Amino acid sequence: MDIPFKPITLQDREIITSFTLQSEYKNCDFSFANMCSWRFLYHSEFAVVEDFLVIRFHIEEDEKRPVYMCPVGNGNGDMRDVILRLEEDAAKQGHMLWLLGVTPLGRKDLEAAIPDGFKYLPNRDYFDYIYLREDLVNLTGKKYQAKRNHINKFKKSYSYEYRPITPELVPYCLELERKWYKANRTEEDEEDLSHERRSMTYALEHFSELGLIGGGICVDGQIIAFSFGAPINHDTFGIHVEKADIHYDGAYSLINQEFASHIPEQFLYVNREEDLGLPGLRQAKQSYQPALLLEKYTAIRK
Image (cartoon, one colour):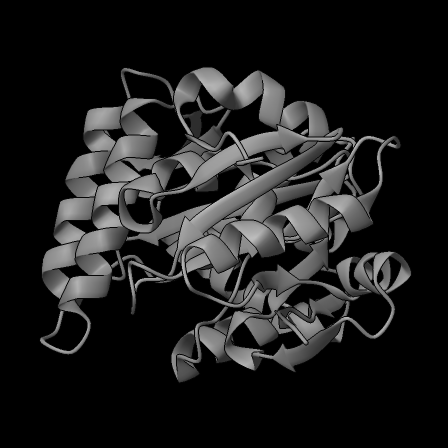
């Protein structure tokens, strides 16, 4: 029987998060806001199969290849049966079953369902950086001295206000993003930045429907930095976007700390997503001393 996949829309937030928010999976791929705002690129779809949430999408390099995320259960159902149905779904489209973004916990669940059923290929560029929220807020100790120096320099140079992102603030965030895009795009990454821009614009224009939380740094009536994200599960919050005007030294360090301090305290962990193999981004994410570098694998059915 065919799996009744349907495109992910804003109206599907409740049913999808009823699985993801109670899950122990902490990877950024399970943020509903991410799934929905990037659907234009990956043609993301979902279904509920035997009390499991299953996600199907298509990788950019080959729009015809279906790939899947690790099924998310609610404590009932049989993952083995679900995997076999996904395998059948992939085969109908002429492909082997591939599961992307499989974490060590997901790998454990897959091995329990089908022992020795998959080959696992790690991809370091897509490992998630996960931090303790209190570390990002307090910046305690010698390892964060440089961050504190940047923030103190900013505070000595500027009078600022932290403002939650509301519909009234969205146009100012979009204006800063336009400036950032113009200053940072190159021929090599123009397509990637254009995709990011489209996703970000969609997210800002559907902020509350996506369940997003965010804030901006305001100096002299202008937004000079902003960040936003959404819950991934019950104890991990995902930061999906962070932008700042680099002409304000320390703006990135400040928005990072301010936003972390405004994330609801129920979230012990902050997932700041992958570095995509970009040296500058990798260095920046490592400089915040992650509590966990969350491994992610492509699981290929044997």
